[in-house]
Amino acid sequence: MRKVTIGEVLRRERIHQGKKLSQIQKAVDIQVEYLEALENNDFDHLPSPFYARSFIKKYAWELGLDEKILLAAYENGSMVAYDEIEVDEEHGRTTRIERRKIKSYLPIFY
Image 1 (cartoon, rainbow, N blue to C red):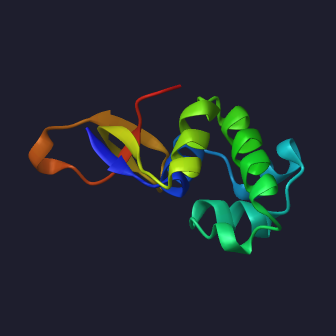
Image 2 (image 1 turned 180 degrees about the vertical axis):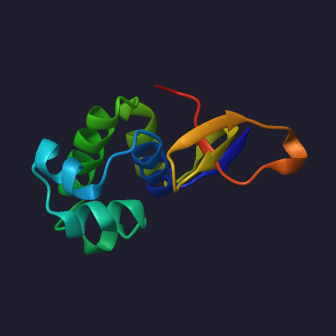
């Protein structure tokens, strides 16, 4: 297990599912610049903490993630625990790997 940021959770899961930001934008009706801010953990770029929580929730729902875990991490300013999985960002594939060959991480919750 390893801990990563909320933005990393969202970005990695989006890539894992093979979705583009424009697809997420259409599904959740949030401007792409705000989705990018979420993925970059730039919560100050969002209109308010209320919108940050709302955007995290909608983005998590669209990706099939447990929004409660992400919202708790946002409220506490903490990280999210991840299981170690290799990600091929170019092709959107994942495979289990040995600990010494870890390149990136995906969430353990779905």
